[in-house]
Image (cartoon, rainbow, N blue to C red; front, side, top):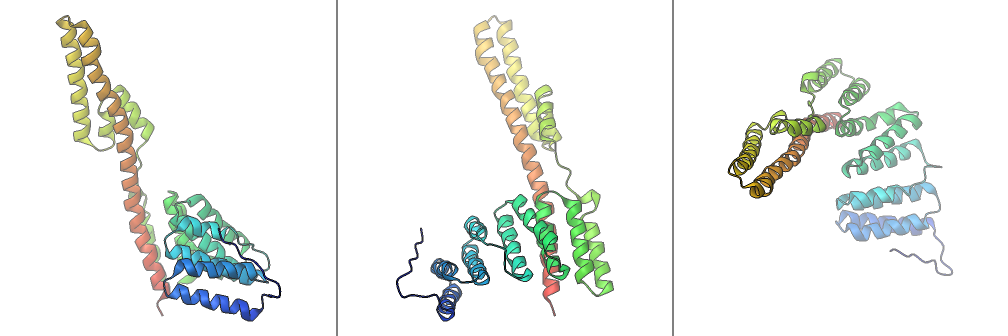
Length: 289
């Protein structure tokens, strides 16, 4: 907990808050992020105007970001009041909030921040700068066609060279071609397959040998059950042998769900990571003189 007390005779002058900000900046540059964050917290408390307070909170969030503490960075940014500050500062605050939420895997909040930027910042030359992050967020939410549209809008607005813009649009079209978009496995369908046809759920998920092994083990369990009953070992057949079958059957269902989720995660991760690389390269291209 951080406690800041005013003592009698003290007033938060501009020179005083400037000194606090400079000290915080100096500590940040020195890599002392936790201590720098305390100075920025003090600055936000003493600030007499919302612009200074907002700037202080943004810098404190940067201290958490530098430590990869995305949750606390997100919490600090939630304290920002968006009244009486410029559109450019509103953009920085909401864009950073979206970035923290994205890094914290809170894609719903991240997307909502970008939507606020689009809706309430009238200057499109400012709001368009959020589109690369917006595309990354949409990719993680598996809204790939929307991400494609957002990237095309970004290129159309920011790339003035017609030949370069055309090439980028073609590349985006290829990256998000229907055949390239991940075909996700239906987890419930995979479980039902394994429920009625042991091993088929694993086969559906693309794991042939696991499916074959699961089917084989369950056949062995049933075979032992029938053999025990045939030899009149009724109690053994109904408990031990059939118990083996039940364990393999239940295990097969659980394994099917795991493999379906694994297959989907791998497919989505591979697709999104390659598109992430393109988006980051696109940003670097825009930064180049």
